[in-house]
Image 1 (cartoon, helix red, strand yellow):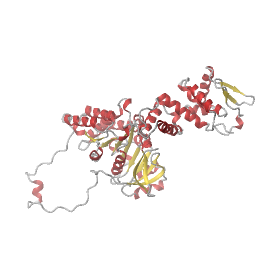
Image 2 (cartoon, one colour):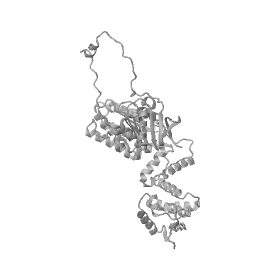
Image 3 (spheres, rainbow, N blue to C red):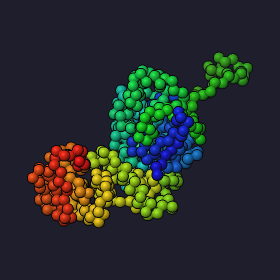
Length: 500
């Protein structure tokens, strides 16, 4: 069963659902001009997922600190912490799995970029033991990953851009799922935006931004005008976590106040004093305005200690608790089988590193609250290879013979297990031997010659025997199982699975 969060309604007045598990794996980009409802959308997303996944919000204007009032987010005030403290706080955030808001309000532009970079790097560089799933929401992402030179110094821009690139390009394997929002796609670095697979595009008026939004959503250029007509809070969504085709979404209500909302029109106040307006402004007795708060490294020791203590004692998200009591062992195994099947159905899974796949599997298990008793990397790889082999020949086979083949694969090196299971499945199912290109693709290669070398190695150790019949059909025998693939003349083959 998938975990969905409700962000509002579609144009057909049905619930607009986002697959949280898929979102963690594929990231999200939100775009819209000022006043289009981006912050409202982010707030709705954060509120609906607050009890399901750990969250970190990079908040340049202090708009999201109200989440702490209702959802126990810890507010980290960048103005009260120095560089080392920010990195230490980020590390503890991952260790204790506490949701936080990094408040950059009142900090100079140059310092905002450096603080965000330090905090993101702290989240990114923790030990592998703490690579738990986390939504990392970055509002006004064009400030931290500008496409061109910004108001900040080159050093600050370089640090921030590198941290944002790490978040979007390399963060997934560390459990970091970037959700970035920007006013203009043209101002956002392309290598950061390109890593998102889900998109929510709001109201925009500039032709260059409309064209780029339409291109990301796979729409024709003439359809780009739709972005000018969107109402406040309406977005067009697309992506594996949202919809397979562009879908109009009206964002629903939120539970917490938005400090960044535009002020309402109010009448001017009447004169509160008999003094002339000129004297109220220019009188020497008028107190000078307070200067903007600057970030001081030496001023925040007490504040940092308070934040760290709050992080260590804050309640953890609901999904990190013990497995749901109504799940039996068989139900847990079935849920894991469903996860592995979904991963096996991805054609690119064979080309991804084994460690990357296993971390993805662990992330999906945590989302489904399956507990910590999950297969290690080698056991997971075996189950994934077995599932993919069964998909290559889905017909019913002798279960005892197939089990014997699976047990035999346990004695093989990692590079031989996958092709052996593919060949064994074909033989057990009485199918023709798979072609070299199919074998190569099965273990993550585009080189048929590499598959032939691997078959030669398997034959040298006596695992298989290769032979050709009088009509030129290749047959692969498995001596220990006393079976072999079916002989079919190459001219009679119709598809890669050997069906004729």
